[in-house]
Length: 608
Image (cartoon, rainbow, N blue to C red; front, side, top):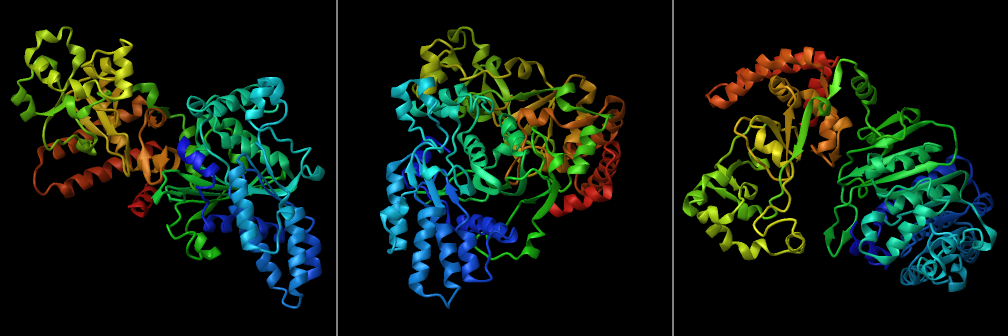
């Protein structure tokens, strides 16, 4: 979430949808009923049990979660039809005054929260809402010793021990904490930089600190520490903590307690701003503060109407599965119903990682692709000297097995130019584009610092490898299915393209076959890097791909060569032939991975 949107959230312009709030409130209250801590058999038992419980939102904002809690509570009260309405109101006031708590860093947000609650329940007063306080939930008073008195005040330290009439622990903590990368935000915002410095140095926090931590990591840790034994935490948060390597300490901390449910919403849009959906992949984490480790309910790939349409428990079977918490560690969490199969692959001694036998390179960064990348027609029209031109491919040109360009493209490669005057036609063309090439803060900064010439690429990433590797495998950085194409023309690509260069040239065909196989679809979807329904073929996930050892994989060469040749010839009526070849190839590869081919075939059909 960028700084603008974070600030909007903090000032009350950014709302957690009611449907999400209702889901979380229902989840935790059902758990409390299940535990026998909320009794509904009579009004007296309900009253006695509910007044023993306390609820807190540590980033209350404009109050959506407290309003959701009050809506649930008022509905429960109304179900006791025999009770006098005034008694219900009196009980409601008592509950709000003594059992509901909230903290926020922004006074405007808190004012909006209070006004919304009173507007909804006119019999409440500001005095009834005295447990809504200003402060930073994750900054303690040790900040003064770390940053000094003046800077400490800017962070609004908050003492949980001194506030709330001595109440130190809560039965339920829920909400939507702020999300932003502390290091990146610190470059833009003074308070974020102060918070970064504080968390890095505080004895309470430095054991969990990572330079690339997100602020919500600390809200989760603080909240679990504020919960009573057998209490509940339920937050909606970004889902990248599940796999981000800088979340390892958070994952390790969470494993101390029982994780009840992870609802991974993936690319399901949750937040809107100014009428537009925000690109934030989220999940709902619900945890219970007990040490016994039962199975975790994981819910994934839910439909778009998940929150707007009532889905019965039996319907959830379609989207849910269980995993054993003891199978998880501080490393990336693989939330897959096929976890055992993935672990079997990862432990297979006959497999090695792709990064051990090949170089993974990202495409160069021209900065202005429209200026540097030209068609053959444009090359001829401008008479660009062929010495400074290289073949270029876009990610759309990369297909499974082969690269098929609709129109040949070329890129001017300024790194080949020592003196621009030596290439007068290229010089004339680039001078006509000089205004564009000297535009933009990033390019201006690079040019003024002397890091690039005005006609250079912004970054010559992996230039040497692209210059020397005439044969390689290329792939788009993202796709619904693997698309690994054989490059035998020495193509260059931009940053949305990755290249795979085997250490041994003889591996080019076996690796091409493995990367386009059904086993890779399975492995990437269940253990690779996903963004919603898209597989992400960045450097790190590509390096971790398990492949058979050399003695095993070389047997794939004849299959793959034949498939590539058939596709390259573009003959008619060869689809059936290719399908048979692919069937044989996938059977052979599944045996190498000790995987059941029938299982893979069914898995493949289900995702198409």
